[in-house]
Length: 70
Image 1 (cartoon, helix red, strand yellow):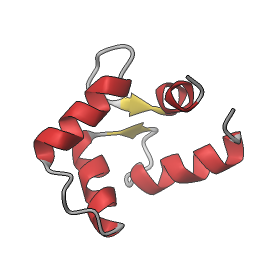
Image 2: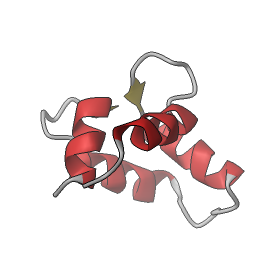
Image 3: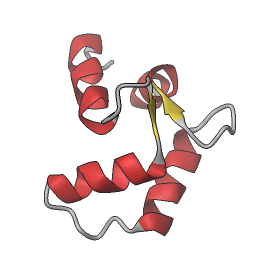
């Protein structure tokens, strides 16, 4: 099981605008900032879609947390 405080900090690194959701663009930009330039738009879309339980195209913290605890 993941540590929720660590998970919140990690989620915050991706949620650049602080609205409580991570978009594919935010995910791609955060990965690029960490040096992973292989995450293209389509790859970011696929990662978000794989974790997006309600299908709204956004990753909420609850969805992120659930993906860490599978």
